Figure 1 (cartoon, rainbow, N blue to C red):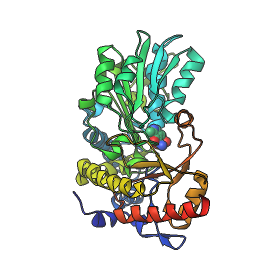
Figure 2: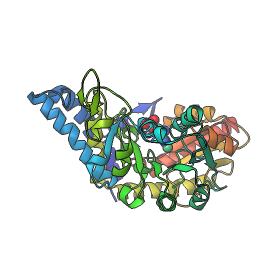
Figure 3: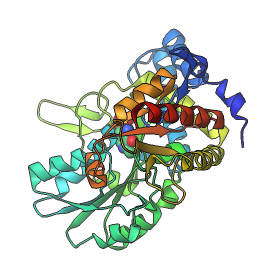
Length: 406
Ligand code: PMP
């Protein structure tokens, strides 16, 4: 366990004021704040080291390339991947899932083939599959969550048919906080010969992840939620799946040779990284992951579990507060509505006036919101630097919102 007071000193933004109050940042599910080591790394690279990667033979290009490529190993270690060759850099989860859709799924799916999804997916893990439905006649098969917000792994597996070509599920719901048993889903899907994509956008943030233990085929993550720069990210792709993928974007860096008549490609993972990448973002992402590994993801998980338990206890006394999802072991993500009144945007605006940042809206999860019969919630999502005192500030803010709106 770490000393959260000390950890907070690593995040300069946490000491600023918003509307006259010290910031309480509870919008980590949307994007997390950055530790000084990430900010310093980005500044250092731009100020002292910057050049394009993989191209020049000059000193700065070699230095930047070395720092950039080092991150591949850092991501592999963070995710427990067997080899850094199974890591493709992306701009975030959205690009990672689109890469799988275009490079792996599209060429091998036709009319009537099926993709199994949970109703709790973020649009990033829905819309690329809708493209395949629209363009290639692929059928989307939906598995609903239980009343407590959990996702029954056996129901996901029961949705698999001889036409299923992929199961795509989130590790942790960005709305409900539900942790999905992706290891069981992968084991069962593989027994039926079906590959599995696990959307790691939220999962990798809240707990230690080991893709080798999960066994999944694809595990995209997004840098900005992992305390790194926006525009950074990566996807773990199992070597066998990567060998099956055709290139997605074409351009510089992903080729071996280009002639008037033909093109040959670089070996994976470079084959899937066309053009000048997010060089500085990726190096900053590496600094963020090193920071997290030094802190210990098990310590982050333990800290957040304690916070979540405290928050649940405090919320219990607010009998007008509805929290979506109460699955055992859920992550510290609370989507809330106030009984008898108050649009999520109004709740969020009242909290903002007290310096408390939460997200209001549909959280890019329309099918889940429809399933829950809601249009919007106010979502408080906790991170590694939040405190019990901040839970108290949130509760005070909610009580004020209830008085004003309820
Ligand atoms: N999946 C989940 C579960 C998410 O929470 C998010 C971000 N809200 C995404 C995918 C998309 O991530 P990004 O916007 O960084 O690509």
